[in-house]
Length: 214
Image 1: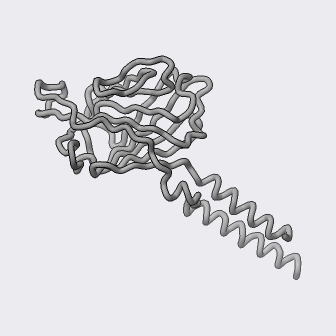
Image 2: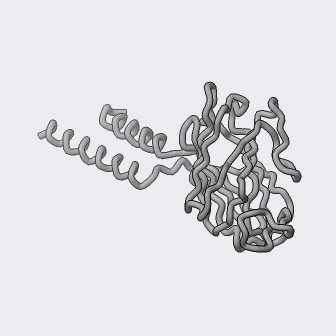
Image 3: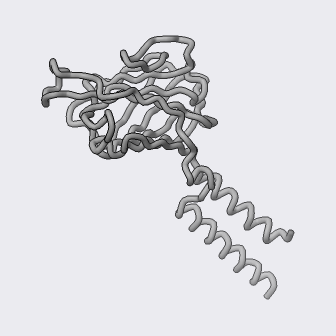
């Protein structure tokens, strides 16, 4: 293989690797959940179509809890920052514990290697919620997560108050699911911007080779 071909191959491989993030997804009862790793401490979770949920989630109006496991050394987490897009109409306080999410809420367990997040008050659902979650602490590294397990608990509020009313209940079953790799992650498809850079590199290398020959 010539130096020219090796250069192009290396450029394309670098672009593909740089653009590929770990993506995992699951759809159930009409609701889609998509996890994507961002860096060693940060990931995103996208929840879509929650207001159009079917089955025993059909009455859900809010999200009360999220739980995560299988991301890496979560026992090292000392703080969690949660950002939600679109921003909630009212302030949401997110607290976390080392432990599992159960039907009764967050169950503290310091050795569980899992994280449970509690929204206070519960987060009002929309059909497209994007969570950006930063896990802080020495030794935290989620970049090699290969089988993220997601738990989620939806709730029903019978009125529009920002305090849990008398009619507050859990909506249907607790989600507990190991997410599957997305098609993009399986194929390691580079993003359009990375492909454009690779094409520019190819064009530049071709032009340089022609000048040398000329």
